[in-house]
Amino acid sequence: MSTCEMCGREASLVKAKIEGTELELCPNCAKFGEVIARPAPIYTKNIPHSRPVQRPRRKEVLQIVVDDYADRIRTARNKLGLTQEEFSKRLNERASIMQKMEAGQFKPSIDTARKLEKLLKVRLVEQYDEKGDMPVASGHQSKSEGFTMGDFIKDKRKK
Ligand SMILES: [Zn+2]
Image (cartoon, rainbow, N blue to C red):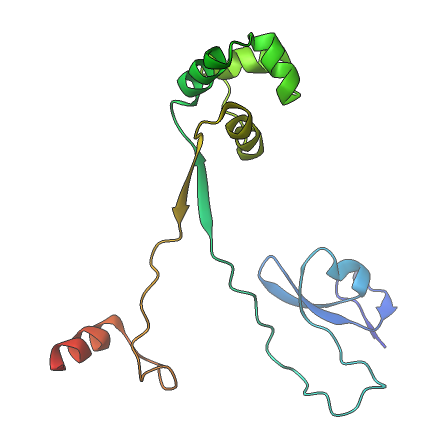
């Protein structure tokens, strides 16, 4: 048992990162940070310890509500022949929100925009894939440390 660097309580500690600082914290305080490593349970045998924590690489997609959302919403709603009030009921929003959205004074959240897209059958959300996805040069995966863009370009010229 050691003492938690945050609250001073005695507990079995976990390593956690809070605002970029690594701390030994009790499980309670660790909730406020990013847990780096949990102590291996005592009863288990032959578990490789201190394996680096791998973050699942999530492809980041940027979603943006189009700038002319107001026009698109109004036009599509009119096509459906619904008043703002009727439509706002379908959307489960207040009519005042609908009014503001169609006046361009209130940009819908991505969630709301998605709902609107379904109901109105228009496109309101644009997606941008994460930029900077570099193709991996083959044959360099294993020893790629210190491998720079310059090397990559030189390498390509050789061929
Ligand atoms: Zn604590």
